[in-house]
Length: 263
Image (cartoon, rainbow, N blue to C red; front, side, top):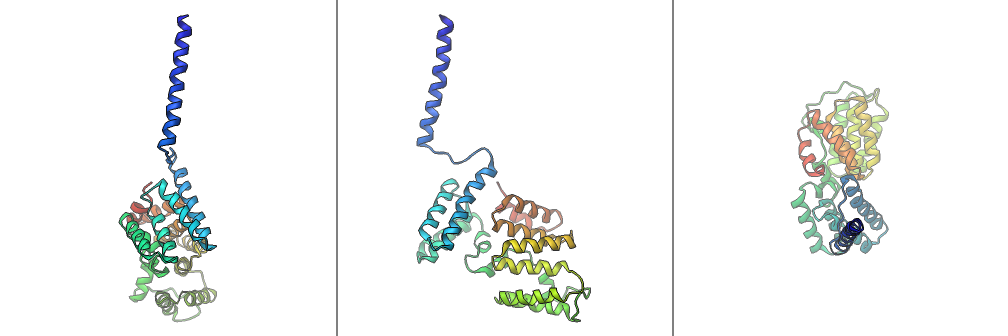
């Protein structure tokens, strides 16, 4: 008899706990799961769907997806930037600026990375050390091109890109790659940067990977490949690449790890 009472008590205890958890879930919904990678994938699924709606001109649906993402993580800067872009597109300028400022307070690089003020703003995020050396006349080529003025040609391409003629820069660097006597990792890295500006992120990843194959110590290529992977929502591999760039001496990568890989 006492044993039956003890068993009945145990059953009642677990039943009450289950009911309590069920009621708690209905009042206080929790979107966080134990696996942070799954948590991130849940947020990115809404952002990817928002991108699809945006491309189709379904702007209200795009906003709804971003609202869902922010309900999971109200400190997710990328979602605020995406929402700002949609609101700007449909003329809700004041709200767009408010979302942009909120994103900037959370992550000062989010606006530039996602091109809120135009694709050229991404140049402030990408690693462009070699390109700066070219502009300063510090890069010396091993003459891998048929043109004797190869470094000058690459410098012209970089100037063209920075002036905003991105398609023209892509045409010129494709030509330079075609006439090259040998593969130069810098050329592939620079073309990768141009492709990122054109939102051709998977093509950019391929170029950065080629640059890394040709020069495994090209730390800027690792970093920029990480940036391109962020833009394709492959956050785990992106952070791996950014960490690799830091390990190879790219100190600026530490800042990106702090803002994009703190999960």
